[in-house]
Image 1: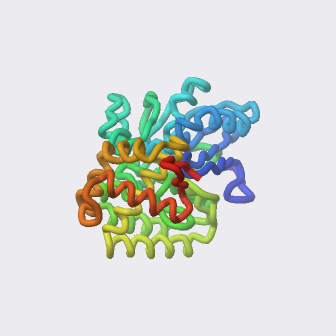
Image 2 (image 1 turned 120 degrees about the vertical axis):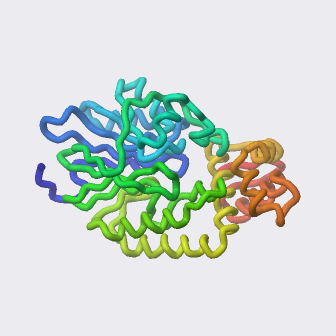
Image 3 (image 1 turned 90 degrees about the vertical axis):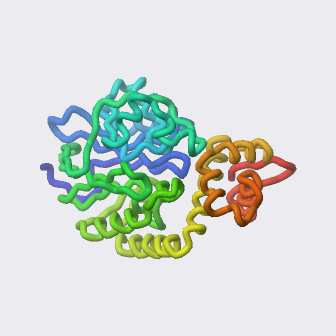
Length: 311
């Protein structure tokens, strides 16, 4: 293995935002076929992703794309990257058959009201496996909770953890199994425990800047998890607001009545209302309007003259 002066030497982290996940380029070491790209961001930003990746490659070759999980903010650019670079896409094994069949129900794109362009799967990477990229040995680690099939990537030699949405500097991603009435909070806690046992020096999260104070991030994540476990309805409201905000990030602007029709037709929001919102409002649409007004009051959206806009 090559000698690295800093944990992030040989890596390019493209910090994006919330609609699009971060991208991590693991640049090829001597004798390797090419650079590996971890996660591909949202389809709305696919052209921008291609431009950023091409610039970061500096004339080098992109060898493959690997996805930590298949939420639309992490894999929406896969199809465009395949067309532009002719690269294979590697995904966690639990999601591969759904992609091959393009089963949008299993992939949850219909249920969440989100969109993702169809792409081709070339292979899988399973927890416990390792692969060499950038002169590093990356171990694939199971990271259920946010998504049952999600994985993280860890380089023990430098202490770099690509955590996806299992751990951010200030929290973690929505626990999607809980939306479906399945347990997920315990998995989140187990993954946080697993991260604590690793010799992590730097975390590259799915959203936000890389960070090194892992102890503080874990403490914040555990505090947030405990609050959700003590009050599952709090997580339900948070998840519903995230779905609405994400939709507005996709659309940028939408009439309130159109947004509420979308909310009523989105099965994840209907399920959340049935379990947690039914005592607060008479219908998914009414609950959705209440949540939109909450988001506008918090300055996350704007609501003016019947038009809802992202901000």
